Length: 183
Image (tube, rainbow, N blue to C red):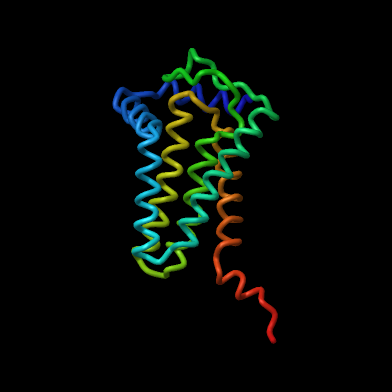
């Protein structure tokens, strides 16, 4: 906890009004159900255009499963959130470890990053980097706002990445072709 508190203390001391607004805006954008519906619609269009059905399915499964596992783990671990006195948002209490938003974003991003990177194109690599940067940005904002400790976010990313990777391994037909015994 000393590390987490030191990071939060540093963040609190260095907050700026523009970063406060940006982080709040990003958090607010992720709250409405319409955001998730829009993301799913964009994912389906990308799946159709790029023939990335397995990657999009793995991202949807990964984000859903990672969120469920993170919520269950929070109850089991029982770690409190940062103090409200240092938070910019009312996080509503509850438990913090692992970050479910960290798990959700990594669970969704990893299968798409793998697909994009495997394309071998400059655009694919750029998409992979942007997805990774977006995932990191969301997690950093959660720490910045005082909604999570930094290790909550790191644990959420690890959990989500593992689940997203697992989902992509199960759904990627190339993986199964490589495992098939030679006849």
